[in-house]
Image (tube, rainbow over all chains, first blue to last red; front, top):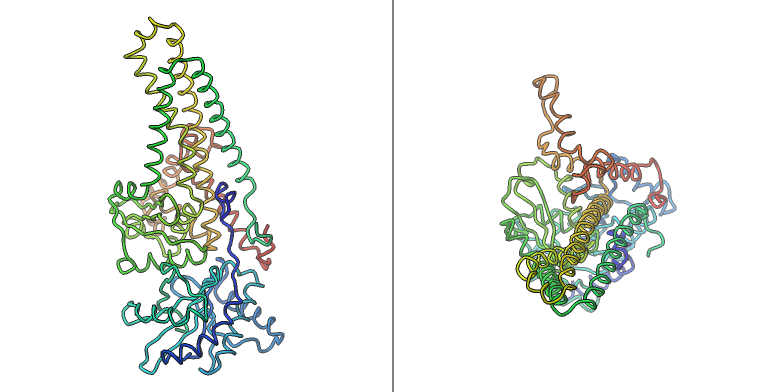
Length: 194
Length: 330
């Protein structure tokens, strides 16, 4: 916030940065080579919908936005719309596990559609899920406002595998802009698509 | 400034805040000019008092700003909680901070039954957000309402309100100290000095009166500024969560102590109870209702509930304009 905004006590909505998402495919290759984590093919986008509208309306509005973006009113992007316990709306996109490029293209399209629809400042994060052969789960979370990624590795019972997360941060440091401020690595328990 | 901002700032609020700060500055400049005038007219004895007050006042303001988080936590008897202790609270704050792109404050819980929350700290890295047990467990807030309150407090952190208000109160602190010092020096040293110099005998009372006036004016201006900052935090908080309605109902529950909106049908409840709610509300908050003219409204640090709700309802209408392109809101 600028000096004037502080003086007047107003906060500006922060517009998201989207382009860094395209670093994900190469990061996925790196993750598999180094640690055996493969994408599950699932990715999701979460944002805060304004109050007052029934969830069904938001669902419909978002799907319409996506359909318009696709230039194909009948089809649109195949996403599921859900709402989490914190009141955020999630759009989940599912692909085959080897279609990382397509998944990222989809996620970017979903994000751009939301930004075009005026939801930009309300975007919370984008999440891409990975798993390894021993069924350890890992996701990369993208923070729009910072333009950075961080790993989130949930264990059972609201614990997280910090060692694994730090290892991932080290490995992906060259491919993606990792979030250096560890206090920003907030857990997304129970996120759809995880 | 972003050109395509989704929420235009509230111009009226900005203007009023600017006017208040301008007046504070004006009082400050006048005060400094007066002191310089007195100092040039006086000997070291008068100047020393002013210098001591400045050092004392400035020092205490700096200390209270620097340790504001620790002082407030200790005063409230609050303890910091980790994400493990209060996962829901941390979850809400985590998400709000990510939305607003701000540093996450530490989180503390105070063992008080009164439902309330505060945020303090000298900067965003060193701030702490504290909620009371009463807010979490006894006020029957829904999660959305709790989120609204947390967003309001986070807005205080983002707006650096602790800093702004400390700087704003600096003048009042110094002026208040001067009144006291001048009073004591008049009590104990006045007679001695007047025998030496007739000029100085007049000087001390002059400083005292001027300081008292400055103190009174700046006190009122600070309270006014504080009320504007509250409105600004309400506004930013509601826009952050996109949910002014939840903040309105949270305000109602917390401010009015109306912890239980009756779950019983009012007609079934005792007739007297049904009658009591509205007048009780009017009585406790009536001071602010009369256009801010009454004394309690003038001295209050918070705007009246009516004003706060009125503003939030405006945001409510802006957000729910049917089919409006959200960008179109001006």
